[in-house]
Structure formats: C-alpha cells, structure tokens
Length: 237
Image (cartoon, rainbow, N blue to C red):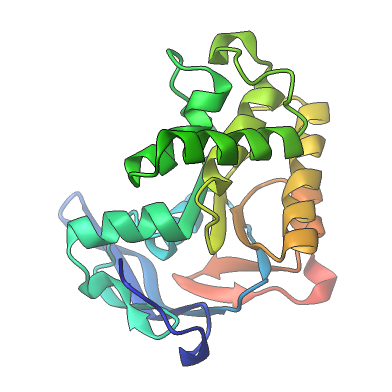
C-alpha cells in the first residue's frame, strides 16, 4: 500500500489535466489544462450542463480514468505513476464511490454488499461484518441488514451504496449524480446524509450533480468552461 504524507500538500492537487477523445477523426479536449486543489474536509459540488466533462473530471480525480496529460497528486504523490494493480489497491483503500445507479449485487443482502470492499482488501470476514453492520446501523438500516437488494426501496439501496463506499474509511467520498434516480423524498434524505457525513465526520466529499438543492448544501461549487475548472462566486450558487 502506497503511503502518503499529509504534510506534503493538499489532499488532491490536479495540475494541467488534459483529457482528449477522437470523434469523427477530430480531437476533442473535454478537459484542457485543469488545475484544481481539494483540501481535506472540503465538500465540493461539480455542477454544469450535461456534456461539459463533470463526470470525466470526477473519474480522473478518483483514478477510474487516466488523463491524456497532466499530473494528479494525492498528498504530494503522483498517483498515476502507480501501476494498475497498485492503483486499484489505492482506490479500494482511499476512495469511496457512489453512483446514480447503486451497482449493488442482487444475489447478496445489504450486509454482504457493504462487506465486499473489505473482503476484497483481505480483511477477516468477522472484522468486515462488524464494520459493515456498524455503518448500516448508523445510516438507519438496522432492520434491513439481511434484506436482498430487491426487497429494499430506492432510497434504502442508495444508503447501502453509501455504507459500502464508507466501509474502508476512505479519505474521500466521490459521488456521481447520487440522487438522480430517486424520488424527491429519498433524494433529500441522501442529500442530508452526504452533508452530515462531511459536517460531522470531516469526510472530504466531491459530488457531480444537477441538483441545486444538493449543491447548496456543500461548501462550494465548481463548473467546467472551455475545458477548465472555474470556482463559482457566491451569487451563482
């Protein structure tokens, strides 16, 4: 496991990140020299119109995609110098992901789904189970531990997905439209949960969202214009 020095700089520091695709023989720069710093404890909403590169930026910051060019530093360590196996281990330990679709495994119950990242990291099954149960109880799912995915409501499924993202005690929670598939009541519950995790536990949080209610609960907002990141002034929040 790669060790990081918290005194070495910001938690996340992107420098001159470029991400290009080829469409109809033409190069398209979705991200064109992005510079960004995320401090430990920040909560950031990545907002803007569809197609500007919000999810692409999140995926690069979360090491799910490699950039075409540029550097991504975590506490001063360029994580894209790691090989694929090292990078996968880094993601499993350091980053929790929540997506619009929960991606839970339907053949397992809520507890087993939350345990999965810890088991992949070779935790003892008993240790993984204790940790997963603690999180599910904290998220109000103590009566749903042994329910299969299909027996849970949409909001409950997404809370299980949040618990799974937290089981390894990550440095950062990254969410991509986490409430885009939920009814308004369930969405509000997830909004409040994400804000509370940041406020009470100091969990660094990055969220791609079209939902202005969720964005307003986070510390600040950024958007992407002409391939570059812009922090929005308060009057545009």
